[in-house]
Length: 437
Ligand code: GDP
Ligand code: GDP
Image (tube, rainbow, N blue to C red; front, side, top):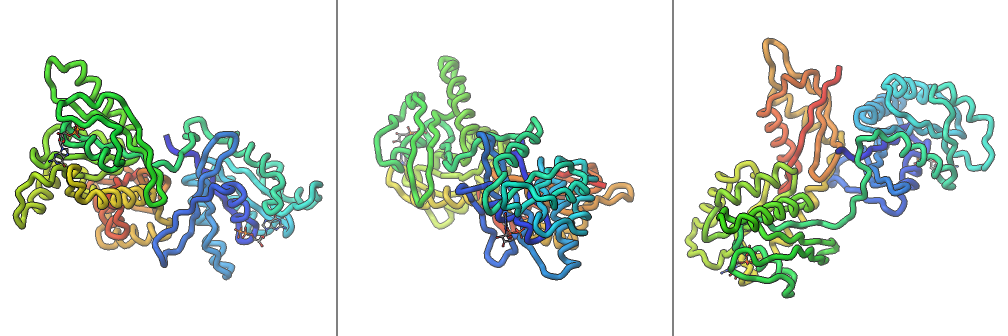
C-alpha cells in the first residue's frame, strides 16, 4: 500500500511553507538533496489522530517573473494531481482572490482530485466577508485558517484525513533502522551480532539450530538507532529437521519482512550457495536494502586476486542484487566490522534518499536524448515526466503515453542513469509507469 500523500499547492507567499511547518510540527525531517541541487519539493511526515501521512510542499522554486510563476505553479499543480491523495489548495485571505488562484483552481477542479481549499492569513477568530469571494473557485466553503497563529489547523487536519482514500497506508513509521542478518546456518550471523553488540545475548554455536529465541537487539551508533532483527537462518533440508526447517524458514522470511536492511552473511569458506541466492532473492523481491558480508575472511588463504575473484562470483551468482555493496569481514577477529556499520548507515541514507522532481527530470530528459524510448510498429513510447513518490525503497512514477511500449531493458537503462548521478548504493530502485494522455 502506498503512503498517504498530501500536497500543498498555491501561488508564492500565500503561506504554504508556514502551513507546512505547522502541520509537520517538530517532526520535520527534510532530506536535503545533494549540494547545489534545487530543492523544489519538501517532504515531511505529518500526523493527526494517529493517522500518518507524507506532506509535500510543492513550493520552493519561487521566481519573481510573472510568466515563470504561472508555468511553475501549473507544474506544481500537475505534480500534485498526479501524486497526491489530497491536495491542499492555499489562498491568501488578506490579498483576496486573483487570476492566478482562478487558473490553478480551474486545473485542480478539472482533475477530479480531492481538493481542500484553505483560506490563510485570517488571524482573527471571526471570519471576515472577504472569504466569500473564494466560493467562486468552486470548492465550496473554504477552510479558514491562520498558519502563523495556528488557528483552524485542527479542523483542517480533520478534513484532510477524512478525505484519504481507504487503500492508503497511514501507519506510523519510526526512525529505527531494522537490520536483519540473513544467510545459511553457520555462516556466522550470531557471532557477528555478538561481536558488534559486545555482549553475550545470543548463543553462539556451531551446531545448527541452537539460536532459538527471537531476540531484537537495540543499539545506537553515529546518532542512528538500530534494531538487529534476529534470525536463525534457513536450514538445510533434512528429513529429521523438517519441523525445525519449516520453523526457521518462516522465521527468516519474517525477519526479512520486519527489516529495512538485510545483511546477507556468506560463509567465505563455502562461497555463494543456492540457499544464499534464495534468501537474497526473497529480500530483493520485497524491496529491502541489501549488503553482502563475506564472513570468516580470516580463514581464507589470500593472494592478490582473492577479493576480485570473490566479488566476481557474487556478482555472477547474485546478479539481481548488483546494487548491494560487498564487504569482507571476520566476526572472529572483528576485521572490518566498523566498515560494515558504516555501510549500514550509508545504505540506510540511500534507502531514504529523495530526488527533487526538477533534477530527476533533467536526468530523464538527458537519458531520452541519448537513447530514445522503445517503439513498436511505428508507435513510440513517450515519456512526459517522472516524480519520486516514496522511499524505502525509492520509487519513481514515470508518466508515459503507453505503458505497453515500455520495455524492461529501458527501465534498466533509466535506473542506470539515475544511479550514475545518485548512486543509491545498497538500495533497490522501483519504477511504476503510468499512462496519461
Ligand atoms: P509560501 O511562499 O506560500 O510558502 O509562503 P510563506 O509560508 O513563505 O509565507 C509568506 C508570508 O506570509 C510570510 O511572511 C509569512 O510570515 C506570512 N504568513 C504566512 N501565514 C500567515 C498567516 O496566517 N497570517 C499572516 N498574517 N501572515 C502569514
Ligand atoms: P549462525 O548459524 O549463522 O548464527 O553462525 P554462528 O554465529 O553460530 O557461527 C557458526 C560457527 O562459525 C561458530 O563455530 C563460529 O565460531 C564460527 N565463526 C563465525 N564467524 C567466524 C569468523 O569470522 N571466523 C571464523 N574463523 N569462524 C567464525
